[in-house]
Length: 231
Image (tube, rainbow, N blue to C red; front, side, top):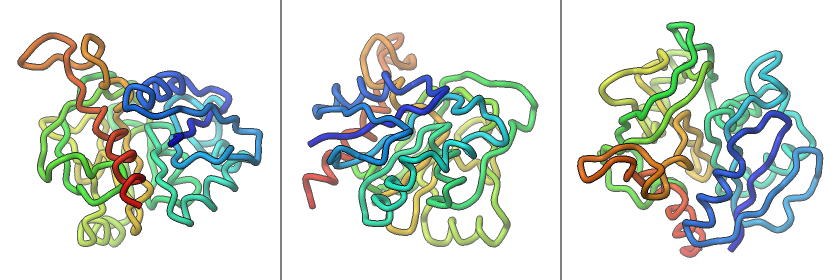
């Protein structure tokens, strides 16, 4: 089983995502934005960063990179796809997910360990959680405010497509405290927090057990592996 991680000009977290995949127990495959080849991978991760310098809009230019034609086809065929932060922005710009991401309402870049509630465990990336689990995942963004029309928000809520919701504090002004969503099929998920930074003891968020011991992010990657094995 192999999970591809796409590097775009300005990506920052592709190596972290590859490491998370390796820790989860499968092979990461480095993919390049300028290719039209997914190299036979079973799932995809679009990593965080500042693709193309966030010019025009965050994720907008990356969403029309050559490889995104293959990503869109693969996603529409049911392949699990995870967009993290800038990757989430790409998924909305490519219309694989609804809504959009705008500058944080307080106007500042933010970095914090963020509490989330898991609200959908039926996606390819969340099956390993229990409904209403409260987890902590690092967050870092300047344009992380999720927006959509009221009708679209009502549809996401009504169809159970909010996967993660901010707890305790809304760090960026996202409407209805939405931190992550899925498509109708449940194979494509985007979220602003960075699960790849919470996969290894000693390097994750603090927990009540020990400093830097949080590994809640690992479950997203193991969930995808379980979903693929179940096919």
